[in-house]
Length: 379
Image (cartoon, rainbow, N blue to C red; front, side, top):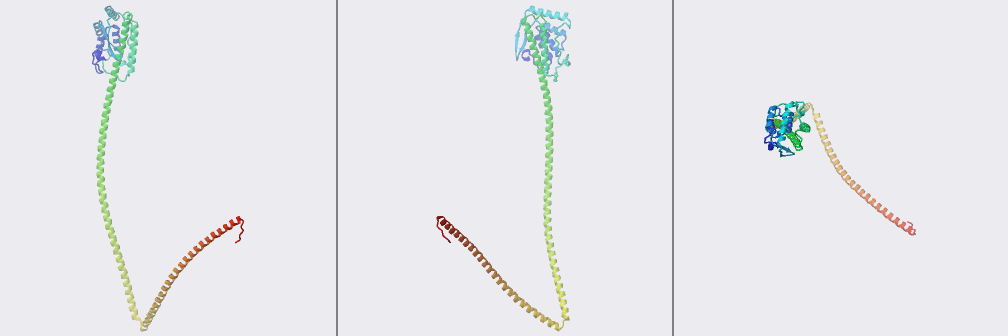
C-alpha cells in the first residue's frame, strides 16, 4: 500500500527518514494535516531528526499543493481537492502567525504521551518487540482523539465542512497508516526473533542429532566388539566343552579298565585262597594219612560205603517225592476242575430256581385272576 501510493519501497530495516520525507511531501498541503502528522511522528519518536527551520522550509515549499494521497479501508484511492487560493494563503499566514506570536503553552497540545517514552528523540530503525500491538492501537486512538479536538477549536481555517471532513479523514488514515507500519515492524521483528529462535533450535537440533549419531556409532561399535567377544567366548566354551567330553570319555574308559582289573584281581585272589585251602587240606590229609592206622583206613572205607548207601536212599526218596508232587499237581488240577463244575452247577441251580420262582409267580397270578372271576381253586 505504501509502495504503491508513495513510491517508497518500504521495509522494516529502511530508515524512517524516507517515509517522513514522503509524508511531508504529500501531506503538507494543509497546515492542520501537516501539524498533526508532525506531532504524531514526534510523539512516537520518528521525526526527531528534523529541526523546526527544516520543517518550516519543507512546509512553505509544499503548502500550495492541491492534491494529497489518502487510504480508505483495504484499498488505496487518490483524493483530488482544489481549495481556493485565498484559503491556502490564509492557512499559510494563519500558521505563520500562530508559530510567531503564540507561546508553547498557547498552542494546541497534540503531544499525546507515547507508549514508548524511552524511544523519544532517537533516530533508529529498531523496534522494541516487548511492546504489543495493542499499545500502538491505543496510542493511535489517542492521537486521533487529540486531532479531532484540535480541529474543533480551530475555526479560522476549518470553517468549511468539506475541508474539515477531509482533515479528519486524512488524520484517521494517517493514523491507520502508522499503525500499519508499527504492525509491520512488530510482525517483522517477531518473525526475525522467531527465525533466530528457529535457527537456534535448528542448531541445537543439529547438535542433538550429531550427538545421537555419535552415540549410535559408539553403541554400534561397542555392540560389534561385544558380539566379537561373545563369539570368541562361545568358540572357547565349545572347545572346552569338547575337551571336557573327551576327558570324561577317557576317564570312563579308564574306570572301566580299573573295574575290570579289580575284578580280575579279586578272582585271582579268590583262586589263590581256594588253592591255599586245597593245599592246606591236602597237607592235613597227608598228615592224617600218615597218622592213620590200618583200622582207621578200614573204618573210613566202611563209612564211605555207608555214605554211598545213604546217598542212594536219598536219591530214591527224592524220586518218590517227585512222583508224589506230580500226583499232587494232578489232584489239584482235578480239584480245580471239580470246583469249576460245582460253580457251574450252582449257577445252573440258581437259574433253575429263578425260573421256578417266575413260574410260581405266574401260577399265583393265574389263581388270583381266577379268584377275581369267582373261581376258587386250591393248590
